[in-house]
Length: 198
Image (cartoon, rainbow, N blue to C red; front, side, top):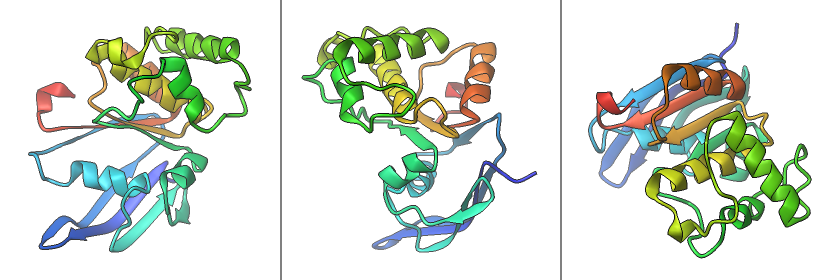
């Protein structure tokens, strides 16, 4: 059985610093993984390489057994790789719904009007127990709801057929909810500086 994601011998250097030195990381469908390490250990850099925000200096990436070169996040999304960022990537002055429709309009949800976008957000919110008010302004949300809004946005942009949802600092859920989420989106990887957070 091939891996959902396989990163082999990934090296990424910045001036004077090697953040990933021949790192190999493999995830099978349905698995939940945690990358744990001190600040600066290279966890986020590795995931940013997979998401196309950084390009590896060397190494190989395979998605569902096919070797790929991911040039940017748009291409990652097309491959079914999504990411919920550690630092919110939502426009604070817009509503949750407006942030969702800023992304790629997926085929499952023809988000042509506000009502359809609201319905899509509510459907995903219910399905994954991610309570989010689609009409709330992002800047008015508590941190936990902002995190949930980012997750809902990523799932919808990936048209719910996401192969992977890389979620940095996602709000904690029960083990059953985590397993259900991972089974639906195929695989999940979380990063943290503290083992107790994952």
